Length: 231
Image (cartoon, rainbow, N blue to C red; front, side, top):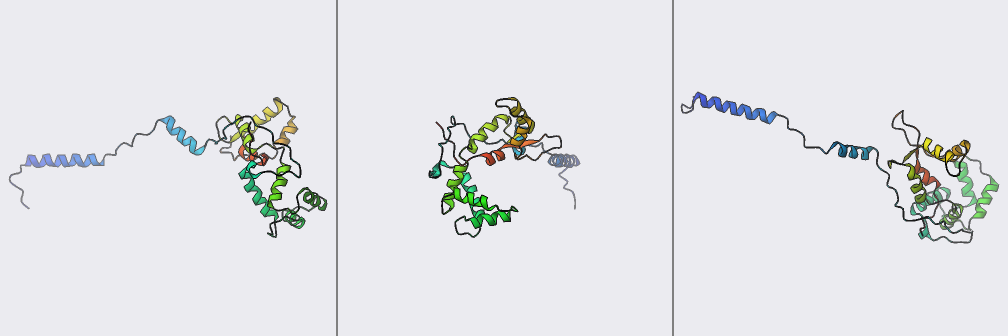
């Protein structure tokens, strides 16, 4: 192929240099898009790995539920819907023959399946406390009477959250021991240990992390059936 005589060697050299410069520019890595500030980035990272606990809003002073007797009926509107769902699962567990009723035979079978020796006197006592027949509605009424003195889960969660400075859903176990044994109605060390003996513990993220109580899970264990009642 012959070279165009109208194009000089100088023009060819300039074209070559421009093409080389353009090629180098296209291969130069571009700076990443501007990131958020360090504080904003850390806030996002912390929210992913340490999400803040969504606490119930305080809507006033808590009013104790009225005392119940065996003949009283509790309206479903007064009950915590999450607790009702849990009770439904428990009722299904006890209703071993799926007839919609819990009998003494159902209780005996469930106790045996769970590895416990059924006590006939205890079974009789449990059945005598409930309405006959013991269907799901009667079971709910029975559990309401048995847990009437327990605060609602929402109330417990709000109270425990006062020790949770960062909204992590965890509280240092040592801090709770210190509070229980030094302030208010002081407990002895043995009483404090007994009170927290069944508290669920959060899984530590590092070997250096102190024992932390998973207090939302603890509140679910301790909470009663009633919803919060405000003045």
